[in-house]
Length: 369
Ligand code: ADP
Image (tube, rainbow, N blue to C red; front, side, top):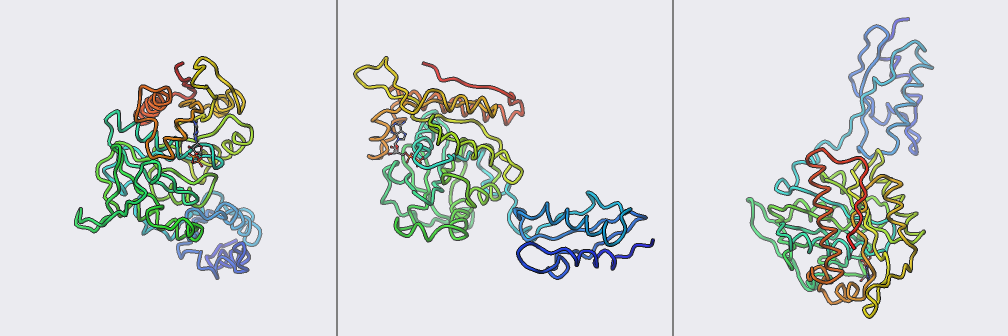
């Protein structure tokens, strides 16, 4: 039979876009570029967002409709080009052009010490002489201003690069911006969804970060649209997932790792940090008490074949350091400071491997005793 573009459009009118009751033609998704070459048919479907969850299923339904309603001999599989409207968004590579490495720090659930690890890793990297920036994107509990003892900072605007930019706060050699500087704690809940995503985009693109070796992002716990926004906005070098050795935390960390490695997000996982690995009382420094189980994070790292970047003990000073705005990593001589130094070294090593494209496929780094 002879195939005409109109026949293809008729078939696409039989495919509804989920949740709208409208078909693909009515939705304006069928581009005017239907090409017919013998029995080969190709054209583009236009989606609003690259993150549209229905892209795969709609393309499949469109293929099936063409084979069913036009001709089952048509060569259509793989010939539908997916296009998205959001092409005006700056290319991720163009944002933060002076930043060498962007690291997202995440956890499956709250309270496992993700923010503590982010703060201390930032300080440990700065102590090693790297230029470091930290974006506190944890809209559910922005705690970095307190950890860096800059709760009262109200970042001002500066003229830079011919634009008005937000000047990050700075302490312990780390440049810091937090959603907490701009939102009243009690209003944080209002800042979820699109509002929070837009605010974070501004804190990235309209701030005077300057040249940095490491830009760390303290993400909210779990898997949220903030994670998607961040990966779509920035060219992230890799993600670090923080967990405790406890089973419930591990189950959520597993989901977190799967999200980063999945098709939608597709960010390499630099490794796992096991926090609260054991408790050592100050008066018995040789003793280790595995309050949340032993080596849970290590086993999870092995399961996913990602490096275990560090094991951080439970120590009262870590908690106190967080509360009084003086991260323990500032003292690299202490047991905890040394643990964060080692973590920083392992992170640098992983990033350098990745940048050289020679990342080993399976490597578990175990902390020195
Ligand atoms: P999250 O960001 O995952 O919600 P936080 O970093 O806010 O977790 O940590 C939760 C609480 O646990 C804080 O009071 C913090 O000081 C404390 N904490 C985190 N890690 C440790 C540790 N290794 N030893 C002692 N206290 C810790």
